[in-house]
Image 1 (cartoon, each protein chain N blue to C red):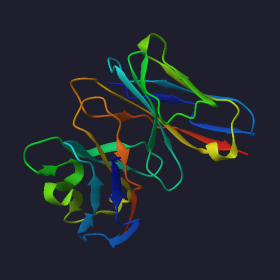
Image 2 (cartoon, rainbow over the protein chains, first blue to last red; image 1 turned 135 degrees about the vertical axis):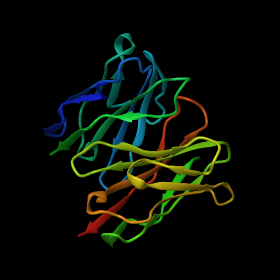
Image 3 (spheres, chains in turn yellow, green; image 1 turned 90 degrees about the vertical axis):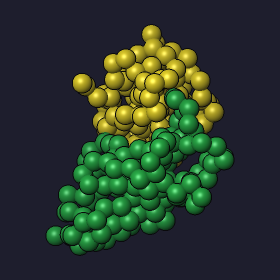
Length: 114
Length: 114
């Protein structure tokens, strides 16, 4: 079974530039999460999707961050414009809603904003 | 609000030493508890989990954890560590409801010398 796939793995951009991250969850997993992990910290939730609906986006900085999950499968997280403080690892995770409490994580995208 | 505290930021052990990593959480309701591990250059992987039942749970690679409800604790143990256990360990909790986001601790870096 393929795991959660993310791309790119690394991204370096200048501040004020836009950036996008892509996630393909495990097949059949209805719930998708985006987490941000700052250096020396544990991951923190940005947004959670149930199928194509964003059900928890309270921690998403909506002035510059946006996300979508078209057709309830792949998801894209975008930052526009990026700031220096956005440098972090962006993790995608997925789970089988209603039957599983377990979340499976992708390798993450390490973003560096210069 | 839920929170997770990991008491040790960095633990250094010699091979064959015993390991115990502390984890306390704060949440008023029923919770699920997890330990994730991140080996150097790899993604987060589930080490073990507790949902209900026997408070002593066993995971992969000889790890175990004990849930003590009265102490709001879920400490990770291993009787004899190996060099390959060098990694970062994260304790996490979520509400006992499928699909909810994980709240992570800040992580403990374990360094094992051969």
